[in-house]
Image: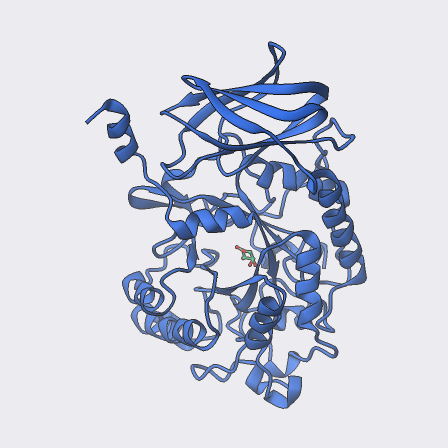
Length: 434
Ligand code: FUL
């Protein structure tokens, strides 16, 4: 075996599903449930089901908003930590079936999945492992069985589910029967993407600010569990687990009257530091007590999607030719003046690039470490050229695409100086801002 072939077998490679998921780039998250009506982030399982009563629910509007942002998948909190289920489950009466909404005949998971499918968005579901309502939670084995039954309902009643979000929050130190739970996924949704727990196929990026950091590594030996602990979960061996950057449009994950959306500049700053670094972005857009998108949120989301289209909607595609070891020539059809360049790595043999440089006329115009599924560079000044050279270090890396853009911008969008997502348990500090 040549040393290159040996290297090729040693690097974990993505599955078809993982690569497909990475190429979706952006998802929308929808946190909705009894918390929305109790004006809380983490209700404790005692808010009565009767509190759940959206007056004007329109899931189609939610997904239209996701599409406006550029999201290609969407995830609904089918059950958050409070245990309230947004579908009429047979496992508990703490669900929409006991609420006044649609006279107890509604199924929000069903409506959500259908609205996604109608709009070409891939539906995903969040099912909180931590359950503050269910009495069997006190007995991990019994609760794992209960959770497996809930998951079976979700995995069998709604068609293909693109992603199942297993949130580690509140589960610190709790022992689930993951073998039992993963059996459900293996049996009914073998192609789904599993977020962070059990036998994950993607991982949490490690913060709730929506930010990745260079290098963005797809092969890891551990995952981080949640915002509320430094606990790491070791993996049996190094695995290909690309990160997802989750962040809320607002300070809260659930909608609160006194909360407000982030600015356009902040959202762009997040985009460049998540998707722009080769990680997926999962942007939470919390519906309000009507079950509608707050007009303030709809406005900034539309601005965000429009600005991404304006900047990146019509890429100038270069033809890529390998020059010599680690160097690629990117040629445009004509001379172009550009201020952004996006490079993509061929990940079929795993993630291999460790450093890279973009060179125009012998001058380095941008550099960085990982490339991955997509690496966006904003140039310090516009460059006029017909060709670029990309120098890539790593274990026999390959590029799959290079495109450039003329956006009229040469600055990385700024993040607010003081912004990071709240780290303490929400029930300890949310009174400050709710
Ligand atoms: C956290 C949860 O505790 C939040 O409420 C939210 O669901 C977020 C996505 O994950 O860990």
